[in-house]
Image (cartoon, rainbow, N blue to C red; front, side):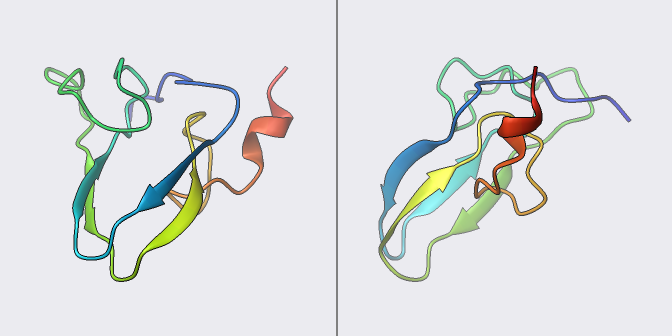
Length: 80
């Protein structure tokens, strides 16, 4: 399997709206981090689509190394 590109080295804080559908970039190539813009086309990656159940503010991973996508787990701290 292909490895994702590092889309950023820190999370992006966003307010996720209740009932809204999101498409999280898993390939790292999107210029609209942390969200998918279709840059994965022609690769083995697909966006992680989810509907937010309750409104909340969260750190969304951009390094693509998190073990809890789409949420940051601090994995970016291991990048050199």
